Length: 342
Image (cartoon, rainbow, N blue to C red; front, side):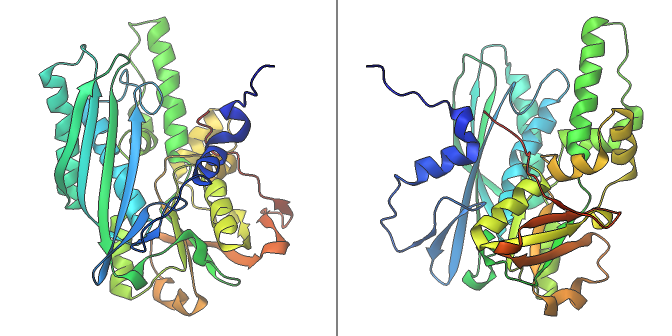
């Protein structure tokens, strides 16, 4: 009798995380939150520490044929800082581990670390350790970020409640569209190395893909305005997918409005040029690293005039489901295509 074999693709990334989490035991009362949010939360005196790790693999998360090593280094740090921001915490330290194949020189590692150090400087964090080892399949980078906050400042995915207002920062869909442009220009170059890549008119979207920005500026502003989100995530797998996570953790539904979704003109125009639906890019494009959060209605006036926070909908009862109201006023069920790792 053959052993049962379940393909990871059958359950997907989040199904795999849930499956592994079932077998994990929490032993210490100081572990306030384990798996299931943007970062773990650990008690530390009158504060809490948040801890998060991300792994970036060459050929999966970045392509060195168009991603400069300095940008890869910066991005590896930024995506982890974004997870700290998503807990409404302030990053303090990072560790960096790298695995290198023999095609990388000391100068190449210097270029990578110039990006890592630039990000550490930009976000005000200390590089406090890590590991280096050999790789047989290109570059692997693992960054762990540690942040802190007061216990009452932490924003989990599970705090959204009915009638809360749904907010997003910045604009969405740019990183996905930027990736499509970079991949298109790579194919053109591979078929004809004499062709010069046409990237000048796509600088906004390609930058969103190559060197994303964690929105720590918003976290500091929320502190100043004394607004604590009721729930929060960063948008790494797409807006719809992240809304599904908040709905699941908070046991709520959501209604969002198509005409409220923020999209940059270059993202919109480039999506149309590529034959992509701009709203699909906004809903399902990953790697924007903007913040998605919910606020109590009483905090609306504090944020109402903020130029970079957009109010896209509201939280409903769980049984009311998850809906997108189109520009024509039709309520369509929200689908989360997101980013499939497996």
